[in-house]
Image (cartoon, rainbow, N blue to C red):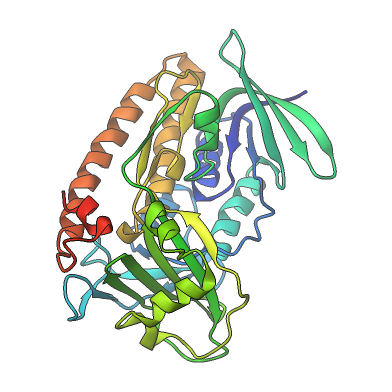
Length: 365
């Protein structure tokens, strides 16, 4: 059986940042389990300049990342509450400079640096079972497609599995969902067509559209609505999704007249939720597994890193002194989550054009 002090499930920004924080500030052994091979195409994200303070804490600098990892972004165009355009960076960052993040380059640099600083990483590996022992340590059963099944014994377990909060659910944590938002989208090829790095938001009766130019000559277009509305209107089907797109006032005009990469849409969870795992000893959630925000907030990456940094301090405290402070961590998450809900609510209430729409009624209560 493989031994490690801290086992992190998930190799995204949250998991990699938790590993880097521990490796930079302690002598604990760290192992990261990642189900993918790190080559999954990721939706682009706008981040504020505060991202550089966070990576500085991780003992990285902007120059450590590959060229074009951070591309200066123009302010978003929002058709929200009326057909008149307004420019904003996000609902929380209206003044700071923003950047279009190349997620593949950014995520890879974080995980690469974690490996260079001593983390053991198992890609394409799936966790099968989590068992907490009497001494509160963990035995985790895993499976790799070519290496087969194996086990890891860890003194501390970290859930960095993303919005699914898969680990938290399996070990008995509580998830509280605020909505059932999902995203149905597609990547398009710009074929060399020059476009500014900006994003466009457009609210419609059934939800809202998001469009953004991505690095590597790509564009993403996504429709957001609640899962029941998507199902009832068959928006997860290409022909219905396309028809809804054609009915938009603005988004349809910004698309390139090119063929998509495939004729299949992708569907991803985008719900707002918070997990509560304070009753589980030697366990903590970070990033989207701890709190997942509405994509309109542009809070995902920054929160993933900052929560991982904060969590690493609690992990070190418990492993070194045997004193759990996870209740303080959970309390801080809850306070931030409640503040976020207030801001999110006020932003959605700016849209009042469809009072009979289930989507907008739910957000205007």
